Length: 153
Image (cartoon, rainbow, N blue to C red; front, side, top):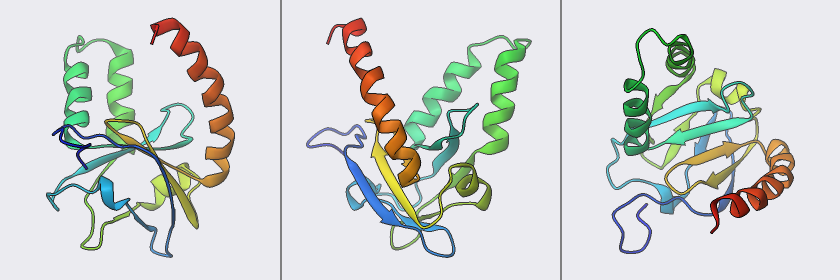
């Protein structure tokens, strides 16, 4: 999982895999953690649309939780986000051959059936249905171009 000599997780590329009848899907070998007990948090994403599954390794999940903790307890929007995340996410580990077994509700929300596309997002990754990914890729290129201008890369 580490990129080159770095100790930080870095998920790159796009990988296509089949999904078996038990909803098991192979994780790219270069993305698998050295520790077989690593827990990935899988969340339908974006929260209001559920186009794909966002997969967060432990470090990235902790960052998100810490950010949520900085908000006031009485902030109803944050409470709603916490309920949605806790109610829809799953904690998954890889099996002995490097597969994730996707819970039925998560696979259904992301439209995952026979095939999956894994897309790296640097410190996290996504799992897409091929059809949804194709549509998203066109939109992403337009959005990405505008962000490059905004953040002055």
